[in-house]
Image (tube, rainbow, N blue to C red; front, side):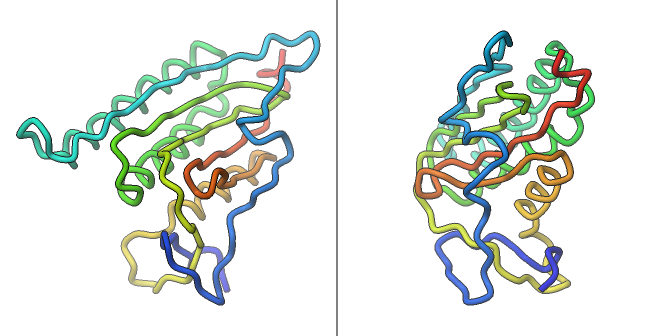
Length: 183
């Protein structure tokens, strides 16, 4: 089975399913501790309130706008913290994880946290809704369903990892910092 033929189907198990990694080259985001002598920090922490059509505005459109806004804020925060080398891939990951939480969780609140610790950029999205997440085959004609495969591949390309924790309520990703970002 090729990675480009897998998709996320919440709540569905499949004998061909591949579980997202639950281990990492660094600690899971909830377990992050600072290295001695390094000033590790939160790059950003934002909360997105899902509208679900409240206030007469199309929920999907307004929520999509909020995700785009968080992406722009994340771009500026990454730039401000000297993480430009990771910016493009980190922003793609942020967008995929936020959109996945928006479309599949049914939650009313999503949290995005970017932090630097132990030589990694940690990207964490918490929707607070446990789900049985599996990566399962998709057809070649499918128009969606490959986002988490992309996230996992980008994390691996950057010497990091992708995983799910808290029963599927948290999706996280780590990207190794290059030598220039570590200083």
